Length: 118
Image (cartoon, rainbow, N blue to C red):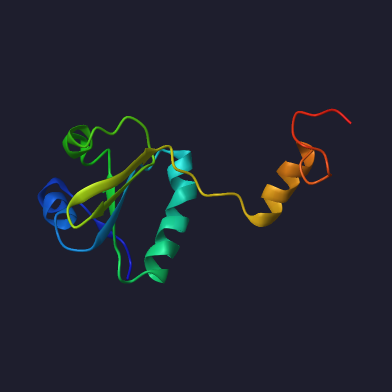
């Protein structure tokens, strides 16, 4: 299943239904939103039993204000109409290779605990 565009008219009905609803608040001009978008779309395709919705904060400014959006992308998770998770500034996790390289630069993975001198 692909993502649904949510508006002020469809938001409440979508999040208050049965099951899990994941909502991405985003904007076209937002760089991290553009990075997160494909990850969100792939998750939607891989999990057809979950409803994935997107709210364009530029087009739906009143909805974003009512939802208390302070930074984007923001991800909200609802289950059976109850908000369980609300996190701003979501970004895709680094891939295994990037994570390994970042850890190696920080001294991780070399037998030395972070913050300890050799």
